[in-house]
Length: 400
Image (cartoon, rainbow, N blue to C red; front, side, top):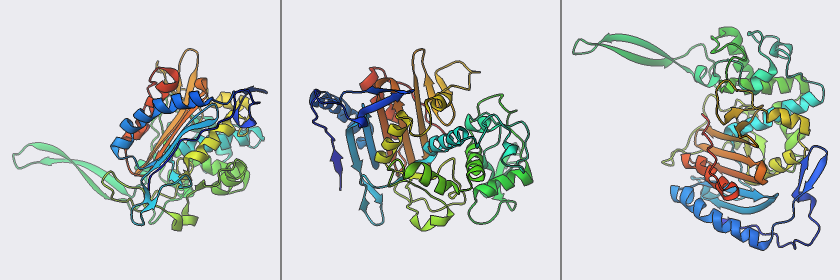
C-alpha cells in the first residue's frame, strides 16, 4: 500500500503563531508565521517532480518528510518494511538510520558535558582506563581526529593476506587471500569487545591525534562506552530516557543484543535480505532505529535547545577540520557545509541496505529527512530538494 500525505495546516496568517513553529536562538525565541496555503502549495508543487524523478522512479522503498518553519509540507511512504510479510511502510515504521545515529551520540556527550560529567578536552583514558592509546581526547573522538583505525575493517571476522606468485605465463602476480581471523570472538561483537580488541591487539593508528580528519566508526563506539561509564546506564536506556521519551520519539529505539528478536532485515538492490551479521549489535556509531516523524521531533528539539544549550550547539556546528580548504567539514557529530555567511549541518548514513539523509537547512528554516531500507544510492540525491528553498543545489557528499 502506498501512502501519500501532504500535511497542510490551514491556520490563518493573522492568528498568533503556535509554539511548535518557534525557533530558538540563544535565549531569544524567533517565531515563524505559519505558512499560508499558497506557500504550502508552492513548495509541494516544487517538491513533487523532484521526488518522483529522484526517488520514486528509482524504486524508493522508505519514508520522506520535508519541513519548513517547523511545519511538514511534504510526507510520503513507499513500499514494504518486510518483503517476506509484505507489511507496508507507514509513518510508524522504524528504519535503521545508520550513521545519523552519530548525531544522537554526540549530543548525548555534550549533554553530559553540560551536566559536569564529561570534559571533552580530557584524555579518553580518564573514562576508559584500559584504552591503550595516549593523548587522544574525547573531542578527538567526536570530530574524527583521533587517528584510530576503523573496527569495521578490523573485526569483521576475516583477515586478508597478500602474496606474490608466478602465474601460468611465468609472470609475478599479486594475490589476496581472505581467511578466518581466529583472534576475533565468535558470535556478535559488542562495544566492550571493540575496546578489548584495541587493548589486546593495539592496531597501528592511522594518524597522530588531532593531525587530520579521518572518519572512523571506532570513535563513536568508544563514545557510547563513555556515556555508559559516566551515566551508569546502558546506551540504549540512556537514549530512551534522555531523548526518545522526553521528546515524544515513540517509535525510536537502539538495536542491541538484548532485542535481536526485533531485527527487521534491510535489503540489497535486488530485494535479497541482509541477515544479522557479526557487527550488527555494536552501537553509538549506528543502530538507532527511527522514523521520519521522530527525526523531525529531534530536529525541532535541537532548534528549541531542548537537547543541549545554544553554546553547546555552537561547539557542535564549529568546523574542526580546516587543514584542507573547501566547504566540506566536520563538527562534533555533524557533517558541515560551511559557507561565508551560513553553515548547513547534516549527516548521511549507510549500513547494509539502509540509507539515511538528515539535512538541516538552518538558514532557510527547512529540514530534509529521507530514510530507506532497500539499498538506493539515489537517496543521497535528496540534496536536490535544498534548491527549492535556497535556489542553489548545495553539494552534499555521501559518507562512507
